[in-house]
Image (cartoon, rainbow, N blue to C red; front, side):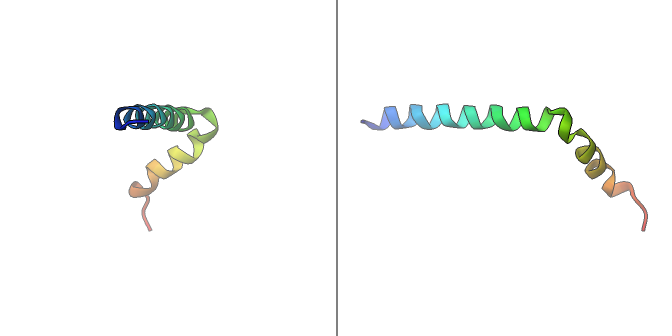
Length: 45
């Protein structure tokens, strides 16, 4: 295994991780908690 194969493997793993994070972030289950977190800076004490 040379360095180019290692770079290719790392690139594929990174793309898979990126897609997994995007799916998690855009899933409907997390929408309520993300909306609540987005409103935090505007809440008054």
